[in-house]
Image (cartoon, rainbow, N blue to C red; front, side, top):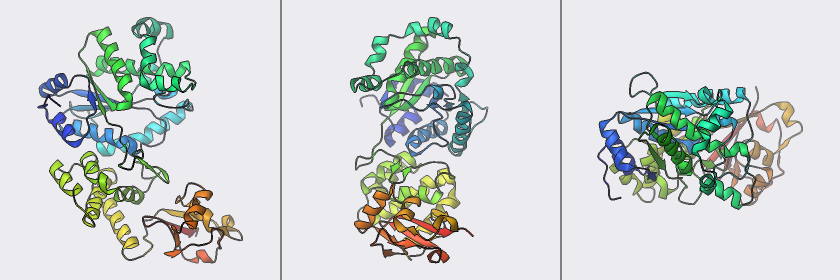
Length: 417
């Protein structure tokens, strides 16, 4: 990078590895130095919670606020009704307004852990694009906004082109998404003086559309900035585990399971994740990431504690670490482990251990559970399971049973009282 930014925000995020692209790095740097500046990231309300895949950009907003600028979390109450087609193979299922509102409420709780909301120039705002999209007049919108978009250019964007190249259907409803997202940027500039949109690098085309539209309509200097799409060092998409998405809502994923996800980070990713997902100084992140052998495990615990503290609080992180020590070092059950509670009627004459492993979330399917057992990776109360058909009765559940998949994933099975 030839240009070396002077603003605190850009220096911090570049050192930590957040920056993929920026439409005008020097111009944005100048605006930040003059500051404070308002930016936004948009989030469609497609689930009840945000997940670890969103955490990179949430941390980006946190740094934005910590360096004296104002973040807007834009909830896609309107755009969720359409669905972002970017790099998807099929159309998103359409949600009802009530489902969308419930999802926004769940996401709002997570944002409140990372950002300070209020009315001062650097306190965060939460807006909903349904406020301006729901009442649009279609003919007026086509005439005033649609005329600024070239279909030829829209078809050239990689997110659309890749779908068409695979001969997968792209509905006219989805094709409108990028126009609506561009319109969001124009509205936020008009309403809040917002001059920057940030997002993952898969949003580059949508962000550039918004910049072009705003320049055409109001002749404003505005900017776009993207973060890299993260994969782990072994090539997996960040935020996915064998059990599914790593949710940021404590009711959908326990603080212990969240802590354990970070504790299980691959050695090669520790330094990088410390810089992206914690607020430890960059030099300390590099030092911890360079540790070798058993010492890297101490760095993983520091990572897990720091990330869990930000989301769930210091007490939850301390409890999770104590539970992990109980499970791994002393062979105990650990009261904070993920727990499957079964009613006597569900067990009947007995339930197979493969079913228990699946229902406890340690395997995605019965087939995967049987393979885990066949390969010697499943244990019950720390003893190897050899028979996938072994039946567990209510008598066996007089005491909680600890199930394990490999060395690091555990769950309890208990009988309802």
